[in-house]
Image 1 (spheres, rainbow, N blue to C red):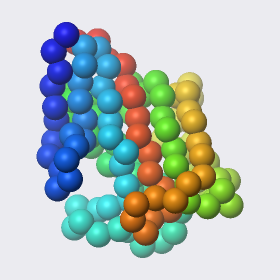
Image 2: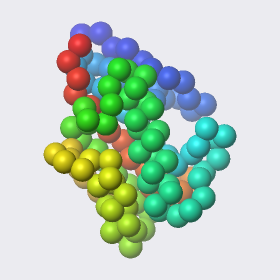
Image 3: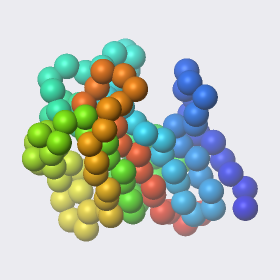
Image 4: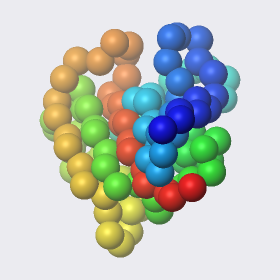
Length: 121
């Protein structure tokens, strides 16, 4: 099986890697095109993260409808309901399998999400 790496990062990771029919998206954070964390709390941060996941998937020829699993890290479990409301907008039917946990993140943000997508070559 061959691997294809998509995108570039200022840290040692690939935003997306295709391995056969699967696409693995590295944990995405709420950073906009300007390289700054978006303002507006968990709602705005979740929207930006989901847009970043969609952009990483697009590099590999996929989209959010191909996502089969996500792994969500919230800094504050108290944000779970607000996060869930926004997340549901991106997966209105047949949402992917998901794991969500509360943990400290490496930078001052409220959320990080990684994704796995399935799209046959």
